[in-house]
Amino acid sequence: MDKWLMNNNAAKIIALVLGVLLFAVVHKDDTTPTSPQPLMESRWIDDVQVRIVGLDTKQQVIKSIRPDKVRIQVRGKRTAIASALPEDYKVTLDLTGYGKGKHVVQLRHELPTGIDLMSMEPSSATIELEDVQTKEYEVQVQTEGTPAKGYKAGTPIVRPSNRVHVTLPASRMAEVKSIVGAVSVDKANESVITKRVKLTAYNARGDEVEGAVLTPSFVEVEVPITKPFKTVPLQVNLTGQLAEGLAVSALSPDVNQVTLYGPQEALDKIEYLDNVQVDLRQFEAAGTYKIKVQLTPPANIEKIEPSEITVELQISGVKQRTITDVPITLTGDNDRLETTIAEPASRKMDVIVVGAPNLIDALKVSDIQLIANVNDLPPGEHTVNLQVNLPRFVRRVDSTPLTIKVVIKDTEAPVTTLPDPKPPTSIPEEVGNGSTSGTQNETGHPSNPSTDTHENPPSSNEAEGTPSDAVNGSVEHSN
Image (cartoon, rainbow, N blue to C red; front, side, top):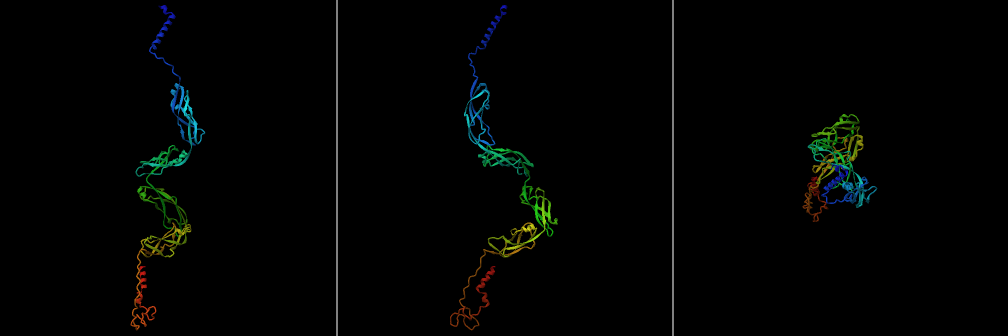
C-alpha cells in the first residue's frame, strides 16, 4: 500500500478524481445554460438641451429658437453608456458669424468617450437673432415705511451714480419706463441709512420687464434721517439811515434760501425768513462792504442752516430824477359804484425820486405804481391819498402824501324828475294899468302874450316858480 501511494502516477490519478468530484458538487444545481452577454449597446436619449455658443450678447440676442431640445440615438460599450450622465450628452448651436435675422444652423454634438452618435432628431435648428440696444436711465429710489416719531426721511443719494444702463432687444426697449430701487426707512432714527439696493426695470403697468440687463444691477443708497425741515426764501432788511448824500445801490446775500429744522406744525407757519437785519448807520462812506450776519432761528425752530451768511452791500452817491406821467390806478371799485378821477384829469402824476445813480438811471415809468384805494367810500367827491410803490432802494424826495380827487356815483340810484307843468289858461289880471281885465285887448279878442306890448314882466316870485328853475333845483340836490 505504501508503495502504491508513493507512486507518482497513482497520486495524479487520485488528484484528477478529486477534481472531477469537486466540479460536480459545485455545478450540480446549475441546470440553466448561460448565454454570453453582448459588449455593445444602443440607446435613445430624450430632451437633450441645445446649448448656444459663439453669440456676442453685447450686440445680439436670441429672439426665437426652434427646437431648443433634441432626441439623439447613441451606441457604445454597455459599461460606457451605463456610466454616462444626462449632462454628458451635449448638443450645441454655434452662432459665430451670424447676424440679425433668421438662420437654419446645423447642430453639433459632443458625446462621452466610447459612445458614438447614430442619429439626431432634428439635426438642425431655426434661430432668429435681433440686435440689442443699450439706453441710460435715471435711478428712482423709493423709501418704504415711516421713520421714528419726530424724524423725517430726506432725499435719497445714489452712489456711485444715479444713472444706470439698460440692455434689451431694440424692439422691447420702449417697454422700460422706470428703474426703481426700494429702501426701508421704517422706524429709522439714525443720521444716515446706507444700504445696498437691487435695481429693477418696470413697464408702464408697474410690472417687471423680463430679460432687461441692468448695469450696474446694485447701487449704494444713502437716506438722510433728520428732524422735519423746510427750505424758505431769505430776506435781508435794512435799518437806520445812511448819511446825507449816500444811497444803497445793491444788496446781495451769499445765499437766497435757508433750511429750518423743527416741529412740522411750526414749519407750516413759516413762508420766508425776514428777521435778518443790517444797520446802515455803521457805513459812513461810499464803497463795497461785506458783512457777516448770524442767523437766529425763529420761535419753535430748533436749527437753521446755514447759521451765518455774508451780505455784500454797495453804497454810492445819490441822484435825483423826475419821472413824468406815471399813471394812477384805482382799486376797490365795485359793480354798483362808478368812480372817476376828477383831479388830475389826465389820470397821471409826476414823481420825484432819489437813489443810487445806477438805479435812478434805469428807472422806467412801469417801475412805479400810484394806487388809489377807493374801497368803502360812499358816493360823492373825495380826496384820496395815493399809495406809491417804488423799486427797492429808491425813495421819493418829498414825504408829503400824493393826493387825488375822485367822484363816486351810484349807478343804481333812481333819478328824480318832475313832470312838465301845463301852460296857464289865462293871463293874470294886471294891477295898476287902468284896465279891468287882462284877458282881452282893445279889439275884444284874447291878448297874445308874445305880441302884447303892454304886458309887464313877471314878478320875482313868479320867476322863482318857473318850470326851468324847478328842474335845475332837482339836479343840484341830486348832486
